Length: 67
Image (tube, rainbow, N blue to C red; front, side, top):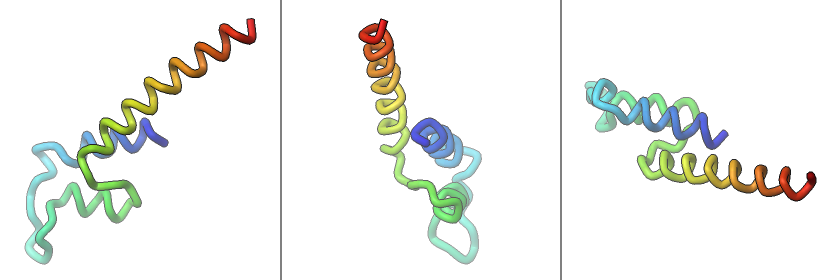
């Protein structure tokens, strides 16, 4: 979930999705993120990346401990 959220936020907050629609004050990328249930703030990219790195270290530690 964290990886998918980070990728979606990174993609839809990019330059090609910054067009403002005529019936809203928000950009097209933010509208897509909101309609799909993702968090539209840019800091969720870093939260997702940090969670993925944390899971890598946690599971590698637990795997080593189990061995």
